[in-house]
Length: 393
Ligand code: PLP
Image 1: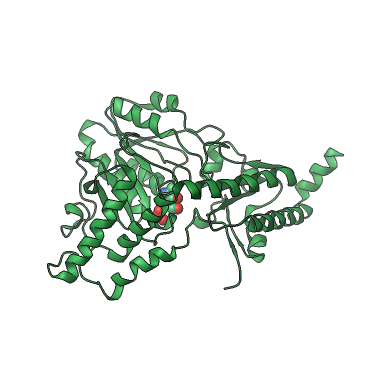
Image 2: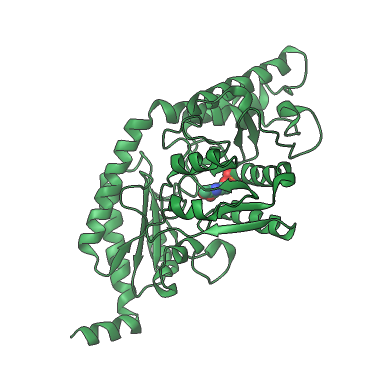
């Protein structure tokens, strides 16, 4: 493939070579089923245990609290459906935010169809949920609060500690979708009062199709998949040994370099934000300036279509993502951008750039130049921009 600049790490990340190397033997050498009693099987079992220990250690959890899944979506579905079912006797009210990933929102809609009631809490103009709004929404029959750790589109980091405290004080289960945060931010499940946490391998230089759900000890959550006795009878199915090994290796790598990676990526992020704000007029940074993922940049550019901008950037070898719901094939702008109060036409002109520590300052310069050129060209073609400029003069 030709040279490209990859700025879509919230969509997925490059599997790190160390991770691939750790996984390789588990395809065609140590390929035993972890449930088998001979050595080839026990080798797999041992490798799974090792990954479980690495992940538990990274969260200040116990290895017995980590359950491997086939990714973040499964972990979110499991957490919500099983938590709702296990607490059903106590009530049927769930609280979540308006900016959750569809893995949570669509599961909430499914639960609504089954008779649960869901409150979708607003966020402020920077995409942060206010704990006082959450407090007001809590009812006697509230059984579950699910609020994401950090948003996948605008990078806003939620007040997880306050939410955890509110949940604990009121005897409500607290789930957080940490798919975008795990491996990028330090997370201590005990300190934050988290009962359930979802994460996914491919967002931290691990493989796709593997993730985990942390379930705090003592929580009686039922099995999600029924079948064999894997994952302590809570998640049946022959374990994805190479995937689990890869996830463990990715977690080890991420947490051993957490601070240096964060600093490096944040520096690139701030450089790019500063240059765009200085050099491209009529743009708006979406998401909170401070409480934001170290690698996330999200801008709306007035008078342009995000999709056209993406195509023009792609022609220059830049991989980015837009704020409109292109993946769902719908013309609606992202629910996240609407929830922070952007009008449709501005939400449509959005661009998300998510960096990694592999990016360079030269790539940032190339990206700014490419965005400037593309935005300029698109505005030249825009009747709305023409009108706007005429009115200015
Ligand atoms: N939750 C969030 C916040 C995400 O960003 C994603 C993926 O983009 C998911 C859940 C789903 O994770 P997976 O792709 O592993 O199913």
